[in-house]
Image 1 (cartoon, rainbow over the protein chains, first blue to last red):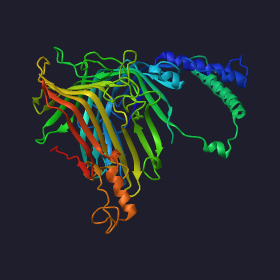
Image 2 (cartoon, rainbow over the protein chains, first blue to last red):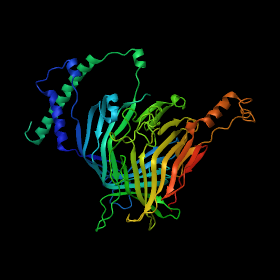
Image 3 (cartoon, each protein chain N blue to C red):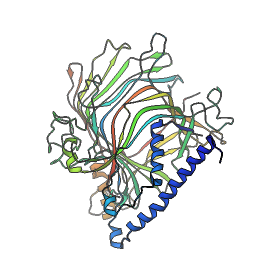
Image 4 (spheres, rainbow over the protein chains, first blue to last red):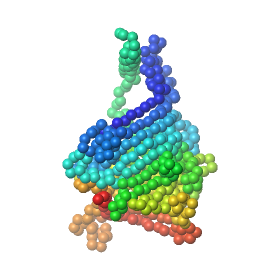
Length: 185
Length: 361
């Protein structure tokens, strides 16, 4: 029901080809354990692109779902989950829209300084996801609902829409998300 | 092999295949050399860890712009789908929603903030239920930075940026550090049918939610998702005011200083249950605590004459401060009039059932 399209800039494609090429180079020599231990990944990934969800409609075409230009049909994606055995379903419904972003970065970074004195005590690696300064939302919408059946085409379908959200334009999202292992089971 | 696009793609394909195969040959050789068996004792020492999250130099802002001369809006943020009791559509237009650093002047000057500390981050973790009073369950926990000992923590109201002034681990902004407390606010207006309300503004200064969590697990008896929700919200100033549509004239500002909310919905003895009923309505329920059996508790309620185990159970249920909700406001003022302090303490939710109802015709 959901179609994701991710367009990445040629830069990433080139670097992917380049990576593929390395192992077949004639100059390769095995690295010893000690030498390998000194290798660290540097740089990271820089992503620009857009993700669209059911911009024109999903792949399911039936009496309920259809293309977005068919007025009597729903074209957004639907995600239903059940909270109780034999109970009804919570639904994220009519999910559609386009997110475009420039400059989402991903890298591994060692933090041993800053953070108001926490960095020095922390002294570990984190995965750093650099948020793009702004994300352009085009006709992004979704609905939170509660439904008696998982699919709207199932018999006895009843649904209560709790609320729907619509977002459009540039959303400011600045900063870095740091991800690292923490806690105990 | 013919020359042309086809051969180029075949070449690329071969090239990649060779690359994959050479990796394939290389990797096992390396990994075999590195593998060593772990003994039983070493295995038992291994802990799976949860995920810690910190947002560094973070700012979020979105809203709805005024339409231009052609009636187009470049930014829209709307919440709709709600119906009034008369069946009219209710639209909430969010003019501005922001999460930013301290001293934003009610969202005018957005600054950056850290959310979570490296040493006490936001956490997503599966925890052992036996450690938190939920017997023999693996519990999924989403948690804000935890509270810490008052000898090391910071004043939750932000009165002092010195360690040892309170129990919050997130630090207020100081001259040399942006801190981990956020100015958060929303400006919105509500439309019911054709009536559009004035703009309503809600702002919290230097807010912190340390010690909040959501715990989820499956209940065997009811075959249902059960949970425990705790929200701690502290802000030195929470304010609400209303302005005209054009934002030029505003009413008096309602200010609640030193605002502290500690809300507990569901606890380990009385979890909150989530469900959707057969007609597609959402149900949230906190079941009443089981009544004591006949003769388990003495008529005068004292321990002497009661069943010791049953008495201890109810003593823990009624005495545990973690199960209680509190709200306190240091000073409540409207415009330049002060109404003093307000405090509601020790509320215990003994039974709760909330059910949505569809008003759509």
